[in-house]
Length: 76
Image 1 (cartoon, rainbow, N blue to C red):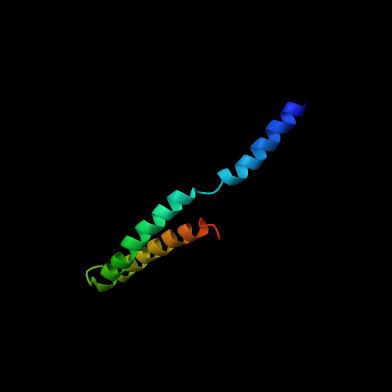
Image 2 (cartoon, rainbow, N blue to C red):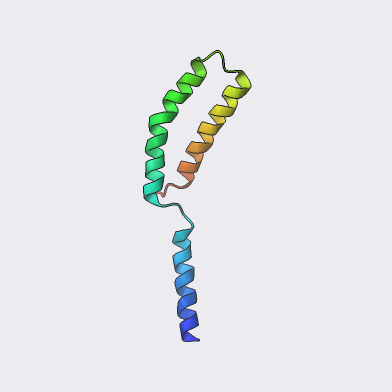
């Protein structure tokens, strides 16, 4: 019984950290976003061949990308 309790506690404590995304991955994704998103948004806004609905969908994609990064960034 003592072994079971120890294992259960270990699983419980380790699973709390396991739910979040690794800090290194989030930082890499943020750097990628910072390098790509501003230029891509400028391109979208300047290109008259892309329809308004298509532009709006692509800009929502950029916003959702940033939201995922922000949601997985730990407060320091």
